[in-house]
Image (cartoon, rainbow, N blue to C red; front, side):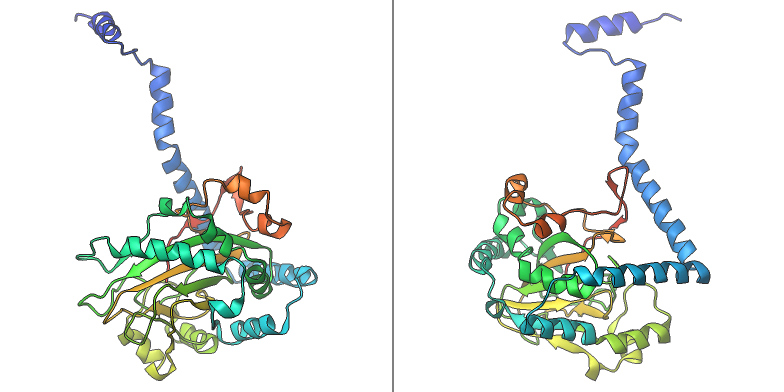
Length: 344
């Protein structure tokens, strides 16, 4: 056999191509597969944890430890004024509360609405054929710090921190256009009834960016107490439920709907209330969702992009605002928990 390696090497060098040795090849292969290996590793950790949590004794120990952490953190919670206490109590009782963005009286609201108006106009011009929804590309957010800053307004963080009862993690935001289609629902989408699983307790803040009526794709939910009963009746663990399945456990008269003008703000705990985005029938719905969990969540939104000048912005934030940007559920500096991305 004739060894052509020297000839090939000389030919590639003459073309300006450097030969790749075996060590370099191995490094390239490892680098290409490192992310896949790490995803497999995280999934394995998650599955092992889920199996262990299904053991009654382990579950009891873990639950008691969680309750102890929440109780210990009570002394660190900020004081709420009367209006915010009303929001908190409604969340604790029913799992959802709506208010107008003007009534929240946040300093960043004007610039927030101005920027989201531009992004809504951009989404309107994207072809929507054969689509139920369109999510704004996450890279579009990097030039709009006004949206990021609205989500860390101190009043918002204080209310949510009280509800979750632990240090917060600001997971990010997603802007969506829900599109009128011929089909009434999708079996495996946020148009079907489900519970979120980012954390034990969490809050999503949903803001309507156009007027949303009963036929405009409004947010629907079932109160906490009825959700708890339904979970037991059907032994629900995860997944999506059709209207037909839901009506068997919770009559339609108990399905609550959040309708409102542009700027309606909905606080909700989607891990505690069955909910869905009702399919729009007459006009598309535009909305943005912000996600908050404890700083050691089970899931996270891996696609969220914060502003490009975040390091500069961070220097102007207070300590609490800086802290909510840190995910403490890490191993060797890398976030654990499975990636989960959705908006309502």
